[in-house]
Amino acid sequence: MLSSAALVALWRYGYLALGEKVPSGVDSPIVMVRGSIYDREGRLLAVDTDLYDVSAWRPSLDVGRLDRYASVLSSALGGKADSYGQKLGGEGADFLYLARRVSGEAARSLSGFLAEENLPGFRMDRVAGRVYPEKDLAAHLIGFVGTENRGLGGAEAAYEAELAADPALARGGFAYGNSVFLTIDANLQYRLEELAQAALEEHRAEAIVMVAMEARTGAIVAYVSLPDFDPNDFLAADRGTWLDRVAIYAYEPGSVFKVYSMASIMSLGGIDEHSSFVCDGAYERTLPSGEEITIKCLGVHGVVDMTRILEYSCNVGAAYASDTISTIDFYAKLREFGFGERPGADLAGESPGVFRAPSLWSGRTKPTVAIGQEILVTALQMTAAATTLANGGIMLRPRTLARIVDADGASVLVAEPVAVRRVLDERTASAVLADMEAVVLDSGTGWRARIEDLRMSVKTGTAQMIDPVSRRYSPDDFIASTLALFPSEAPEYIVYAAIIKPRGSSTYGGRIVAPLVKDAANTIADLYGIARAGSASVTHDGRIVLPSLGAAAIGATMPDLTGLPKRLLTPLLERRDITVEIEGDGWVVRQDPGPGEPVPAGSTVRLVLE
Image (cartoon, rainbow, N blue to C red; front, side, top):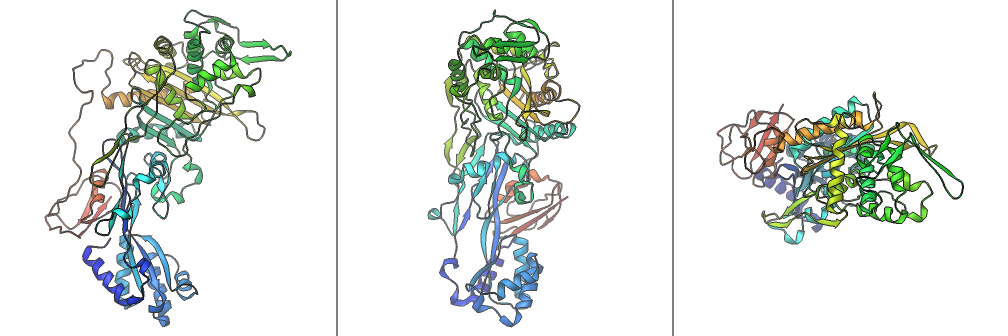
């Protein structure tokens, strides 16, 4: 990047080269600085940095040296010299862009070549460009921008109006957008992404999705969708990695859905805590039309009540329970849980899933929906619906926005928890939450999620996927999932995870996802200080803050930054009085200026990491 002095010299050079023939539309552009994106603790996730647009004014070019122009451009900016030569020597408007949004280093190199070779007719305009310091961390939630620095995905698109700078409010040639703080915790996000990546590789899966949410506020603290991509270079990634499997990807949820179907049936009065059904391995029913319906179970469970239906994940019991209520009531209650509608988590492109109206149901739809088939949901919907169980029957809207501040640091908006509606009475919500604790017993499908000193309410599931060719259930493709609320006595957090198309030793949610959810719950409990059984407790704010290295700061003189990690350097990218260049990853091994040297306004600070 260029210092102020270098920019002045470069501007003077361009002015002299182009003279008064410079079109007014490009004479003195306002630099539009897009607002930054942070996590809930103020850790930098997206920030604008200085880039440059390189242009030429044909009437001022030395036409006899076009080959030399092309060679200089190729050396400084990369690309083939022939391509630049064709642009410069071709027909068209007198003004043309040769490169857009090049780095400060490339601009500095080109400036040196131009001065050395005495080549007139070029200019470079400073523009803002997007940098994502944490690379692929929470990429789907944060999103990315296009060549015009406009949001194309995630929060970048959802908050385009807030992040984009308004040129009418420019000051000193710069216009600044508002900054957005998300609800995620970058520290937890990193840890859960590591767990998910390990599971993705272990089970040779196509994808993994995981959501961690504050049960009492609806705030999402981790938003994991793998595989992911680096938004710094999203065009280099496979397009399939762009898919947000948290808010957009819809699928049949399988047996995890029994939590919501059984809660609905109990709420409607079809069953109570004492109702029971006999599982002999299959649900069988003959319709008035003579059609015979059979839904198989994974075992023969005998007499099952509400607790056993969830504990064993009994298809037969859930299907028979659905016979106790009407189709229209069942549909309406499940809609109240948010299925079939967009969750409203402040994101662009949220999917409502697919939940057909009762007029389109067949005779087997109701019992099939009760076991988590014939309905398409998203991971975001499944997690948000669980807030109903955690809050005495009241559903909260999921949130990814914490607050918005303007360029001066003043609050524009502070997001608050939003109660969507009452879905269940308190007694039903409490009963279902308690019944889910049986799932982690030795006899339950989710025993692998059990944490001995932390009460967990869990449900596992495994769903066959539809083969797009045969349009029948595939014998090979499954989605395995697990939902957990903890601690059960007063849930503080909700974790939902799904592994898509596993190809390892198992496809069952209780075998491959329950351990992942257990690890995630342990991580959350340790990070946020959730009380565990038998542990000593004191009255405090619920979080222990350990002393750590502070973020890097540069004053009038240069400090010694050697050995500092990259995460402590990223706040420097927001400085507007100096230019900071960070090269590489890891820890600082070289710096310029050196320790103790003055750092006046307009300086360029270069940090090399390894």
